[in-house]
Length: 130
Image (cartoon, rainbow, N blue to C red; front, side, top):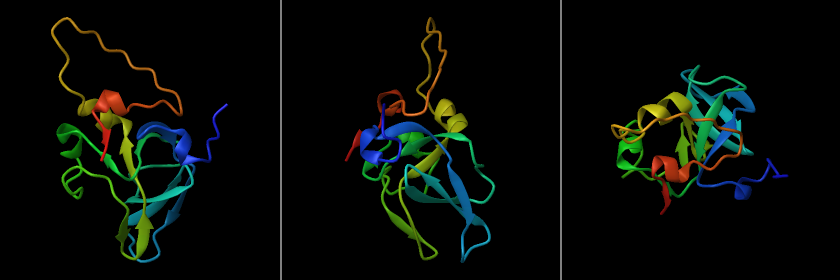
């Protein structure tokens, strides 16, 4: 069984669940979520405890299509940042955003997705280590 507390046990982008949310001490429009023992700063009320997300680790280069949903990323790369004085690691991607930004399906392609916590979806979304 995977150790769900250690980020090293997961792919660059994996399905995870929001474990905890707390207020950002300096910005009322932001919150700090905990995923895989990492803290990630997000827009307030964009996620809630228990939400399933795709968590992208620092050092991941997202596909151009996926990165277009996150204009703050420099050249599509997920890096550690300090947002109003708080360290933010990784990127929490709502599953709706993941599905919206997948490459277009082919004419005869049928798509049905079933995700479980820990699933590595790096290949699905075109993410690589950079």
